[in-house]
Length: 163
Image (cartoon, rainbow, N blue to C red; front, top):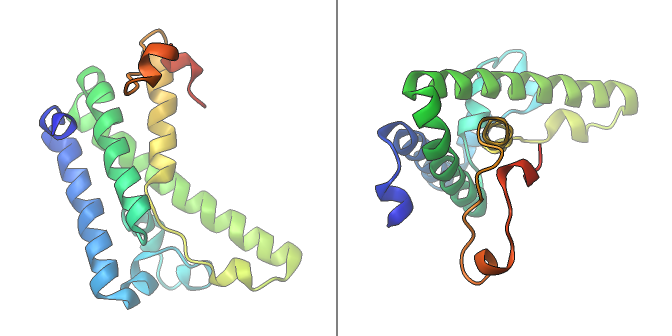
């Protein structure tokens, strides 16, 4: 309730895209061949470098992605504004997709293991990591709100987050 109520339309829209992509995966599993990043298929299907970041194949991943973007987005967006947040997400997603493709293709060349060519990658995790780094840089002294009883015991600040 509280996290959804305090989230902006921008972060809610991102959540709708992530949730819808998971539902597409549930109802049309073959869609993963189109939307997920599969290095062997990337050169004819270049769009999957972009779509993979917004496509989720697991329920846990979708839940973590949606909760993460709502939490991190509501902290970062007031500082940057909606258009800068969207710009950040798009650019980081593209960079994550390209880096994933290059890494997996390089690993295939080095090892000759076909695993690296046919593995399916998807999810918003790279963008969440980048948002954590941004939060750490923008608000280093802010306390991370933790649920009870952790909040009473641990005094974690954004500067203590990974990144």
